[in-house]
Length: 313
Image (cartoon, rainbow, N blue to C red):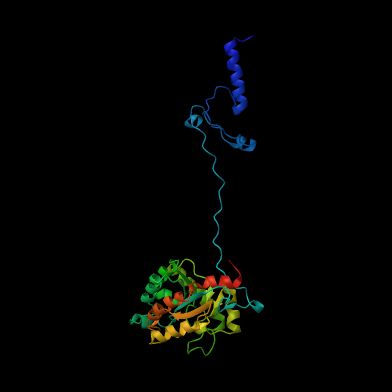
């Protein structure tokens, strides 16, 4: 049958529209000016049909969801490669050619048997020192014992969540890992690894989210046996090349002079974060920091020095 002209035009338009929009039938309204890529056959086959007259049938098609992007995992803090026979590596300072950087480190010491002394009023913390470091904007690394974190959990948590600081491991008990170490009690060899791991557990319980894989032996005393015992924890042992002499010191100026005389590019300075054992440290820091900055030094955390030593950017 020959269709009247108007009907022939409508049919031709319908066919053209179907070809352009890949619609199943003619006359389905489509929003103007919106082009949609055709869905793959497999996707179209698995997509449930929309009932005619439903809100979804007449609503504009939403943009397809973007491909989910996997979150970028935080990079692991820099560490040194294990030593001979897999022994725990030991770090003392960065290469002297790595620039005028220096790391101030603070030992938050408290031994496992000093709870009674803390209960009697002895202060193993030093809020004034921490306030000074924040005021002076000095990035620092705090080597904390697990027992200290248990005694001062609020301070441990505050330090651990402050990006200016990083928390590292100073053992749980602050007992020595060798004999004849400043009169400290000793940790049996078969308990050394557990002592390190117990400190990390104490940090987590206190609310420290990301303690670093760095370990400072109590008293700085270690031997091959101790390095082997803690190798399974994956830590880098961190020593120092500048002794501040702040332990039990009463002359802050003498402590400052000793640090200023000893610092070289890439140095690690050992100090203490305990009022009872190092009462002059805050005052010494207030002298040390501006003078080293005047000399062109930049303060960094231990992790940055280890990154320089390991060749990481």
